[in-house]
Length: 212
Image 1 (cartoon, rainbow, N blue to C red):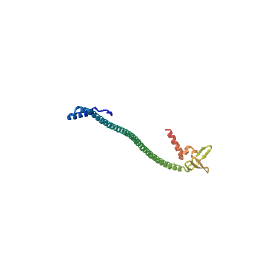
Image 2 (cartoon, rainbow, N blue to C red):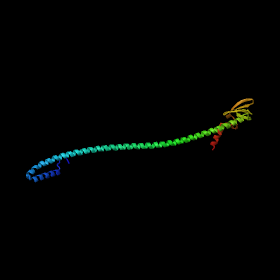
Image 3 (spheres, rainbow, N blue to C red):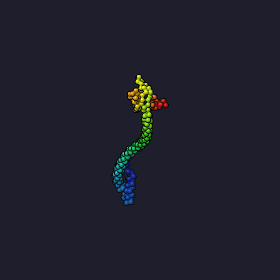
Image 4 (cartoon, rainbow, N blue to C red):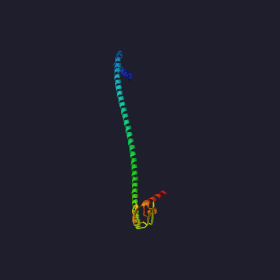
């Protein structure tokens, strides 16, 4: 109720109480009428105080309500922020799990490749040992052999050279009482094959592989 407005209900109630008192005490009606302004004045003052108290209470409740709204807004904002952080953490965890899975897969692939590499190295070492033994035996068996006439090209000819020593890149011959060293690459292919020229063997393997 607005301040300064008399509540009719209060006026009626207090007026009825006053009339009842005067009726029971048999006070003259003129005296009753004369006291009505005092009653109305008392009611008016009482209503103003009640209105002021009510207005103060409403203002206080309104302030509390606004404070509660601000607090609720802040709490909602905090919930939103925490939710975003949780989502980011969940995404980071998923990404970490994906990277860990990739790491395991790469580690397995690496281990498989390392194992394969070790097997290849072992195979190569075994083949190389076999080839070395075969090459050494073959060349040793040729020491003292006579190869007949060898045309080295460019007018250089070896007549009945005798093999004295065979290395990985050259052959030492004795011909006509003198020794001469000839590189394997300068000899005819058929002689190089007999001398177990490793470079020629590799070349033949590459040619065969390219023709497949």
